[in-house]
Length: 396
Image (cartoon, rainbow, N blue to C red; front, top):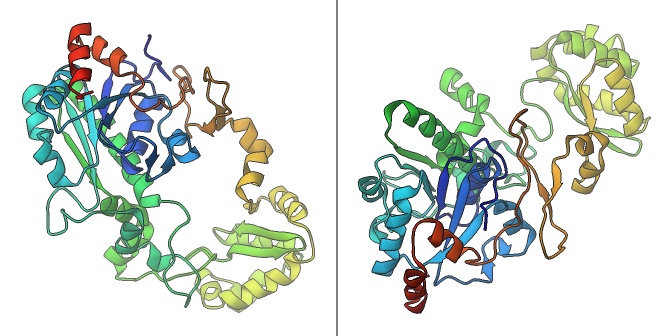
C-alpha cells in the first residue's frame, strides 16, 4: 500500500512516533501534516480501546493522529527492541514523551539510538526537563500552567488562580518540539549529524508568558490578574452590547481617539484622567463603565461594523459553533474533511499556515490499532517469514 503523504514538504523524512497523550502527538502531527512518513508505534500490551484523550475513534484522538500510519511493537521483549533498532537504521526522526528514566530502562534513549544511526534527530518532551531536581516527576498540563505562572495572571482579580480553557502547555511544548526537530534537520544538512531536541511543559509555558515574563526579568514587575482587560493597552477588553458582548482593542492614542469618536464621546480622550496611558490605567474601571453605558445601546453586529469602519480593532465573542460558522473562518478552510473508506464523518482542524507550492491536506484518517504493522515492516526490509514469527511470538 502506498504511503499517504499530506504534503511534499517533508515527504523525504521518516518519523518513528513513540508518543502518547497530547504533547508528543501534537509535535508529530505537525510533521505528519506536512508530509513526513509517520509511523505511530503502539505498545502491544496497552489498552487498545481507550486512551487518556478518550476513545480511539473519539474527536480528540482523531484530531491528534490523522495523516499517520500505525504498527504495534512490544519494546519490553528483546525481539521487539531489536525490531525497533532495525527501524531506527532507516529513520530520520524519533519522538517520545516518556518520563526521562523510562526510555533508558527500555534501551531506546538518545545515546542508545544514536549508536545505531548517528544521523537520527531525537525529540523528547517531558514535564520538567531531562535532568534536574524535578526530572522524575510526572508532568501534566495544568501542573505546568500553575508552576509556569500562567494561572496567576488568568482570571478576574481576587477570584483566585484560573486555568486556561485549552491545554496550552501540552500544545506549545509539542509545537516547540516540532520546531526544534525541523531546526535540527536543517542543521543536519550541513553537519551530517543528528542531535537531541529537548523541551518540557514547564519550559514551554514559561516561554509563552512572553512580555509578562519580561516585565519581571527587566523591571521586577509582577503581573497580576486583569480579567478580560488587557494588562497594558487600555481600554482593551470585553464590553456589553444590547445582545451580547464585544471585544474592543485600543493600542495607542490615535486609535483611542477614533474609538471615542465612534462611541459618540469625542471629548473622552481630552479628559485628564483618560488622556494618557498611565492615567487610563489608573482609572480603568471608571473608563470601562463609561464605555459600557454606550456599547449596551447597540447590537454586537452594529458595533463591529461601526468600529471596523473607523479603524478600531474589534470583534464578536463567539462560541465554538459560531466561530466555525463565521464567513472568514469558512473562507480560510481550516475545518477540513478527512477521506476514509468507511464513509465516516470526520472533520478536523487543519494547519494554521499555508505553503504556496507544497500545501498540507488531510489524506488519511487516523489509523486503527496496529493497522499498518505488516506494511511498515515490509517497507523496512522484514520478510513475510520474519513478520509471521514476530506475530507468533506476540512481539508485534
